[in-house]
Length: 219
Image 1: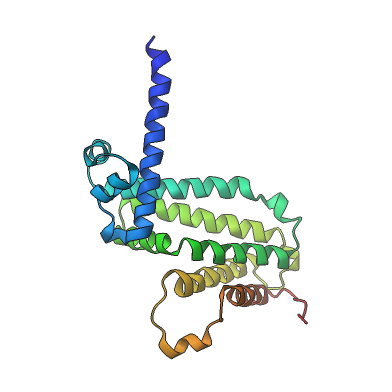
Image 2: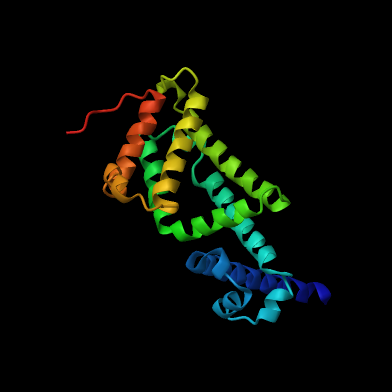
């Protein structure tokens, strides 16, 4: 009899945890690290603060679990979303356009959440949580590198892996600086692309140029 009741209880517990972590991520994206409080999360999730504290001893523990959960799900999506075998079927310029364009769009939509996540992760440097988060980040970059390496014959740079890694990191850093962590640049804004479409276009051009990939002239 115990086995018959255990599975539904476990499923309810997992669903409750998913609901709690979803609410935590939403509050984190709306209010940032400082504005994310247990009472605010509880209200958003339709729970009592006591119910949350029965699962997590404090806000940091809840944020750690929520962020690692998001990174783990992202890792799984990347594994099944696009394989090296599938990447070989997409022309390199088109593939670069799809990847970078998707990043610009995703980072823009989730800018506030990504900003809060980065702030929290950096504030936990050298902890077990930080090391695990870094492993997920490294794994994601390595996956992207492997996808682009399926086109190594088209890359004229003498070291394709290094070129892809360097070019991709430049793209990520640029998107973070312009989209996720924007500072008041004042008149320097005049030197940036006018919109996200232009930003994507120039990033793709820079990425492919660094790899030494010949590009068709537009117009």
